[in-house]
Image (tube, rainbow, N blue to C red; front, side, top):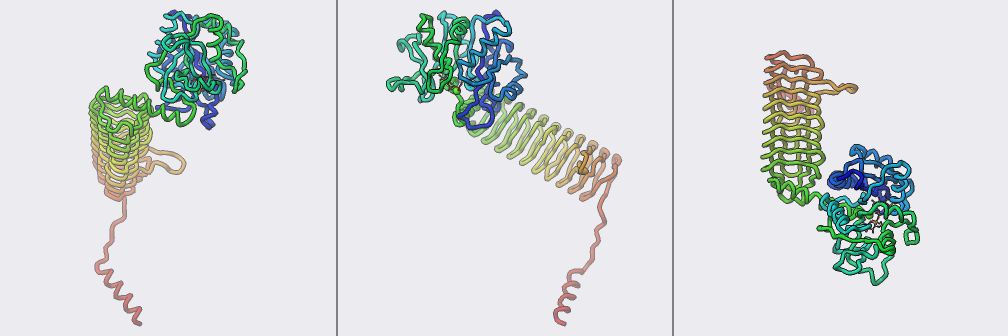
Amino acid sequence: MVSNEFAIAIMAAGKGTRLKSKHPKVLHEIGGRALLLHVIAAAETVVRADHIFCIIGHESDRVRTAVAATGVQFVLQPEQRGTGHALQMLKADFELSGRPIPQHLLVLSGDVPLIRPETIAAVRDTHLREHAAMTILTAVPADPTGYGRVLRASADKPEVTAIVEQKSLRSDQLSAPEINSGIYCFETAALFARINALTTNNTHGEFYLTDIAAMLVAEGKRVVAIKADSVDEVLGANTIAEMMHLDAAMRLSTAHRLMAQGVTIFRPETCVIDAHVTVGPDTIIEPYVQLLGNTHIGSDSRIRSYSVIQNSRLGDNVLVRNGCILDTSEVANNAILGPYAHLRPESRIGEAAHIGNFVETKKTIIGRGSKANHLSYLGDAVIGDGVNIGAGAITCNYDGVHKHPTIIGDGAFIGSDSTLVAPVTIGAGSYIAAGSSITEEVPEGALALGRSRQTTKPGWVAARKAAAKQNTNS
Ligand code: UD1
Ligand code: CA
């Protein structure tokens, strides 16, 4: 596409009063990602990021920071005086910067996040085919209440006569079924020629972009509507409840995408899977699993119920038993976790390693085939291959001021309930006796005992009881 032919404006300056939230609306998340990022991702499939103009205003610094990495342009709307006013700011920005004005302008709403690239392209194509001055994306949802309504000259014709906002509907228009999605394509010149003529003579006292439709029609310009294939993709997120409806729709479609790729997801409606998670074929995801953020799971793995996996990468044939929590960690092929394992950031679990119940790891590397099956804390440790960590063994990595490393060589055997006081190195193949407190380096192949000897007093209990009885009798 010729670079100056199309640009996209995304209206994202509003506060989102109906959310009753202190955060700007377009930064609320569905599917684990800000609304605005979803819209930008869809827009980027149609034009390059530097042809996308985000109109920001409420908490503009936060919004800008949150999406800056996408490379989009920003236009400031310092006061939010309506969608028409947002586009007035865009026009002023073009004029001030001397940037070439694109021939066509697609306008998206930052709070309509499920819009699909194909649909944006369809709006563009209809616009070009119909030689329209304005093309409006519409839908007919079960309940149109709250949306602006698109009135057509005749039900079976594309021509539109006006868009009427909910609060301005006459009683005989209240049942008008076709809603305005807030997504349009304009001839930029036709829009910019009229945008400053909008007035605020309406219930909200705002400049309505939607009024442009009737203005164009009155001047004999062509305004057409195109219906979206699915209703969900044009729904807006004005309240938390609406947002959660979209979140559920998005997650269900993510689950369906994964299932189409050979992943089994039992009861997908109970799982919380973020939009960008990837999972290999023949992996099984049980009910009530959460896969969040930038998580990748290989094939032939199984994630049992109630596990929450975030920003982590798991290999093939990994078994995550019930109730595990993984954050920013890596798990190699054939490893087994849980139940109730807790992998905190920067844990790297080696191939075929086992991390069992109530074992917590943090910034720790566990080698191939090593096992820590019960009740351990392993932090700031580098653990070799084939190591056995007994129940209750703990790395004491923190002295109250600094964190210290523990190094455990290949094949070492750490007895149950040992405390390894870091910094400390345990040589390869060495044995640590159960219950030891290890404070000094253990050389390769050594046995280290760090506990006091047991003393046993035969017959002590009977003697004590006899003495006590004599005392009460006297
Ligand atoms: C708007 C439409 C309505 C349509 C609905 C679809 C108008 C007047 N009405 O209503 O016909 O059915 O969207 O979802 O356009 N924004 C700005 N600056 C502002 C005001 C809003 O950038 O001054 C942004 C908001 O951040 C939001 C988008 O524009 O992303 C739409 O604004 P919103 O107030 O949600 O409009 P609706 O009442 O939903
Ligand atoms: Ca809205």
